Length: 278
Image 1 (cartoon, one colour):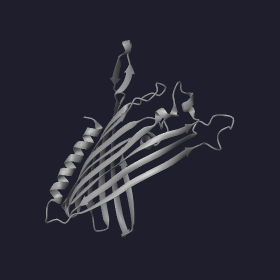
Image 2: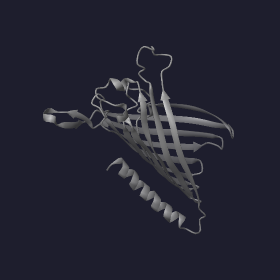
Image 3: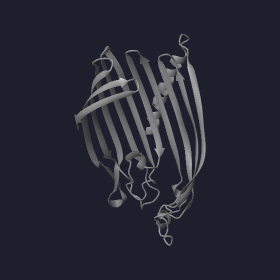
Image 4: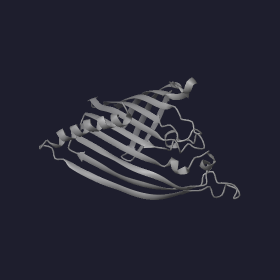
């Protein structure tokens, strides 16, 4: 199932929940809608670090268009949030390294970007469940990995979808639990030119659990446990006779445990000490 289809399925489920909740006359409901509209001009230029006689490798101009809407519906026990934005980036000039690519016009790198998000939350005094999904389609790999991995790291198109389910509950007054599961798919599109290599897709699963015990109203001791599986795969490898195959690249597992003691000195001030292993 594609990322768009997963997001649409979850949105339908959340909408059905909302209809059932808002249809109850015993619960007063309130709603809020926030529209978004933006047109921006972007100019990127390395003014001080480039020899004026050379072509600036980062000089570029483009216009961004964005329109979106966020909506929320809330009752005493339920919260539904749906929102999203869609935009288009149009390059209007470039003296960058894009011109060094054979037969490539920088306007070929124009792209649409999409950001959709949804949240359903059911909360009672001793129990709460949260379902959320975020779908992002954009370029900027640096937004995900927090690093520039190549000269063209801002030019790869990707679709990133993160779905999560979380449960919080309290059995007895001093003891509380939290469990969360996340599933992420990061899919890259084939670059618009063969001079750019296509990164490997990513599938991530994360499980998180937290147990907290309140020694007294100010002191709390907690244990955090987490396990992640990162699977980089589906890299397209050219084969003989014009065929293409997909191969698994990396399978990475990650675990950690953290024990924390926190103490509230005042309603706005607290101190904490933590120790753990990973």
